[in-house]
Image 1 (cartoon, protein in one colour):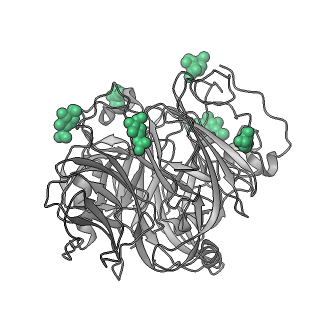
Image 2 (cartoon, rainbow, N blue to C red):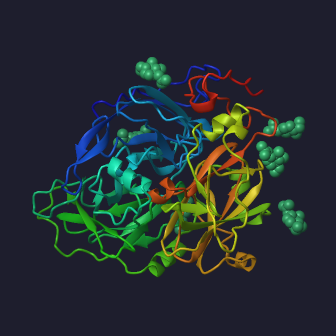
Image 3 (tube, rainbow, N blue to C red):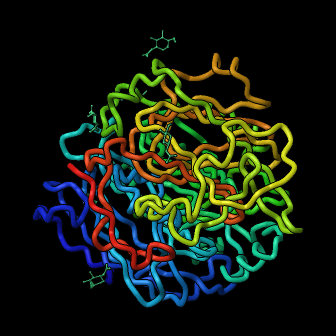
Length: 552
Ligand SMILES: *[C@@H]1O[C@H](CO)[C@@H](O)[C@H](O)[C@H]1NC(C)=O
Ligand SMILES: *[C@@H]1O[C@H](CO)[C@@H](O)[C@H](O)[C@H]1NC(C)=O
Ligand SMILES: *[C@@H]1O[C@H](CO)[C@@H](O)[C@H](O)[C@H]1NC(C)=O
Ligand SMILES: *[C@@H]1O[C@H](CO)[C@@H](O)[C@H](O)[C@H]1NC(C)=O
Ligand SMILES: *[C@@H]1O[C@H](CO)[C@@H](O)[C@H](O)[C@H]1NC(C)=O
Ligand SMILES: *[C@@H]1O[C@H](CO)[C@@H](O)[C@H](O)[C@H]1NC(C)=O
C-alpha cells in the first residue's frame, strides 16, 4: 500500500461539470503508476504489469456513492487502459475505460478517471483492456461497502479478504498477442494461480490470510483469468454465499463454487475447525488436463500445516448448471439497488425487444476470428462514443449492423465495429445462444441484468415459461454452457455506449464483443453527462471543435 496516495475522504467542492460526479458524496483518491516488472506465479518469470509495484494491483476499498478518482500514470512503452468491471458508471460511459468509449492512455502520460460507485454494493474488479495486458497483471479487486445506515443481511465479519484467481500462461502478453494476431488459438493455459501465487506445499509457504478461531471472515473471489472456468473451495470449511456481482443472495452454504471468467462472489467462512493451516484450492474446469493451485489460510495460534487431503473439484458442466439454479436474489435484504423502481418487480415488465446473439468461431482469410450473428468485431480507430458525440459516427461505424436474430447458418463473416442502437427506457430480452462446444461467459457494461434462465438446447419463445421472473440474481456476467442458451432481461435506463463482451479473453480480442448505444432523447444532462473537459481525444475527432454541451 506504500505508494498508493489515498488522501482521506472529504466533502466535495462543487466544480460544475468538470468532474462529472455527484457532489456531496465523499471522494477517495488514488495515484497509480503502471510499470513492467517480473512476475512468476507458476515459478517461470514473465514480464508482468504492476500497479504501484503490486501484482495483483491494489484493492480499492470504497463505500456506496463514493466518488473515486484514480490518476493512472502509464509508464509502459505501449498504450494502456483499465476498465472497472461491473461498475455501472451511471450516465457516464466516458469513464468505462474500454476502447469503444475511451482513447487509450499513451505511453509516458497519465489520465485521471473520475467515477461514482452510485447505488452499488459488492465485490468487483478492474483489469486492462488494451493488447493482451490482462494476461500478465494490471488487475485487482474493487469492493463497495454498504453505507453505515443500510443494514447488511449478516453480522460484520472480522476481516475482509480479496482473492483474485485466474488461469495463467507462462508467456508474455506480446507473445500471446502475436499468437492471436497470426490467427491461431491460444491453446491451454499453463496453470492457475491465487493472488498471483501458488503454494508449494513444502511447509514454507507464507499464508495468504489469517483467521482467528471462532470468527467469521468475508472472502471476495473474482476470476480475473483469460479463459478458464475455475472451481474454488476451502479445505474443511463450507462457504456461505452472501453476495454475487452486486446483489445480496439467499445465503446457501456451498462446498465449492464454480467461478467463470469475469464473475465475482462474496462468501463468509467461519473459523470453526481445529486450529491449524488449511488450503484454499482452485482447479480448472472443463479442460482436458486439470490444473490446481493452492494457497494457505492460517489459524492464528494454530498448530501444524495443512492436511494433504485436497478436496476434489466436481466433474462435468451439468454440476455447474445445477449450481447456477441454486442462486437466488434475497428479495428482503435492503441494499442499494441500481434501478429500484424498474427492476424490483422485473417479471411484470413487458419486453419491448428480443435480441439473440449467437457466437461462432470462423476462419477469415485463413485466420481465426470469433463472430456474433455473422460479424466479428474490430476495435475502432476512434472510440465509438466519441465519434457519436462529435456527430461523425458515419466515418467509423454503422448502427444496427447485425440482425436481432442470427442467421441459421453463418457462411461469410464481416469484420466491423458492431453497434446496436437501443431505445432509452426500453426493456430488452437478450438470448445468448451458444452454438459451440466451448463454454461462454458474457458481460454487459453499464448495467446489472436479471439472469432469468440458463438451459441446454435451443431457445424458442415457449422457453419463457421457464424463466425465473421472481428472484433471479441481478448481476453483470453470465455463463452459457456448450450448445445451450442463457436469457437475460435488462432495463435500459442508463444512457451511453456500453460494451457487451465475451469475458473469454481470446474471443474478446478476436471479435466476440459489441456495443449498445443509448442516446438521451433530449440530449439532457439528466440522462447523460457531457464529455468531460479532460477526456483524451484521438483518431478522427483529434483537433475537432468540441460540440456544445448538453442542456440541463
Ligand atoms: C474499508 O472501508 C471500510 C469503510 O470505510 C472500513 O471500515 C475498512 O476498515 C476499510 N478496510 C480496509 C482494508 O481498508
Ligand atoms: C496528470 O497528473 C498530474 C499530477 O498529479 C495532474 O495534475 C494532472 O491533472 C494529471 N493529468 C491528467 C490528464 O489526468
Ligand atoms: C435475506 O435478508 C434478510 C434481511 O436482511 C435476512 O434476515 C435473511 O436472513 C436473508 N435471507 C436469506 C435466505 O438469506
Ligand atoms: C403488457 O402487455 C400486455 C399485452 O399486450 C398489456 O395488456 C399490458 O397492459 C402491458 N403491461 C404494461 C405494464 O404495459
Ligand atoms: C435509433 O433508433 C431509434 C428508434 O429505435 C431512432 O429513432 C433513432 O433515429 C436511431 N438513432 C440512430 C442514431 O440510428
Ligand atoms: C424529455 O422531453 C420530454 C418532452 O419535453 C419530457 O416529457 C421528458 O420528461 C424529457 N425527459 C427527460 C429525461 O428530461
